[in-house]
Image (cartoon, rainbow, N blue to C red):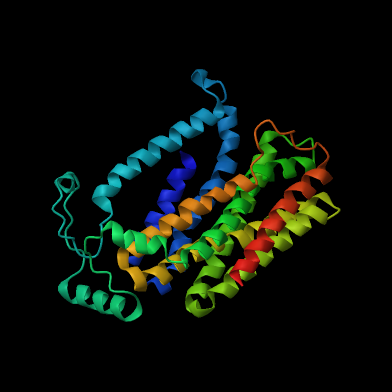
Length: 329
């Protein structure tokens, strides 16, 4: 359920941002939103040390306390968003009976501002005036070949990200077998801070030079490959940890660029439904990339020898990224 919720958030926010900004200018805005996930991962690494100390309180394990508190906050935020977050710059003429359950939206923009926004969207993006869509519109998006290279690109980077989540703690533990769980949690957080830094530094230039997004995506992939080569081949333990930081930095911009690219390609061709459907396909099918780096059931456990662990993990991710880099080029 957690991965599906994350996927829905990413594609939903991509579509939502295209209602307010031209698709050519949303990569860094998706990045700002996406940094919340990276900062959350970093914060979880830090606060999990505190949750571990709550292990056994009121009969709950530490991770159960973390899921409970995070779930309550997320649930309340989701309900409040119905009143706080507007649907679009101008209310839509929706007459469905279910729409009556949603709080009414007031226009956010004055007439002059609404006209300026509409002009900006028409000049720099597609005409995203709301209209009802049909299954035929959806089918046109699915058979459009342009969506599938982006799905493959997203598939590769998601595999890398999930692999880093799954094996990062094991690699850190292999640096010093005497590390406690709290030590590993504290060392795990900087990986995702580097990920957030990569988003904030690279995506604005990706928007500024939007005609060269392939170069920014390919460059990020090369940074990830470099990081995992260092993690796999470096002799000193802390150099391997530095490789994880490098890989985290390169991983950051890849997902926002993929999502922005799908909106940029499908908005002018298919309108709102094109952006929504393409984002759903890219995020939904691309998240299957996690299966390439997850340990299969009933398989032998990871080798206790650090070198074999690094080599197996690094080799799988480098193969994924080399294939991914070829698609991007």
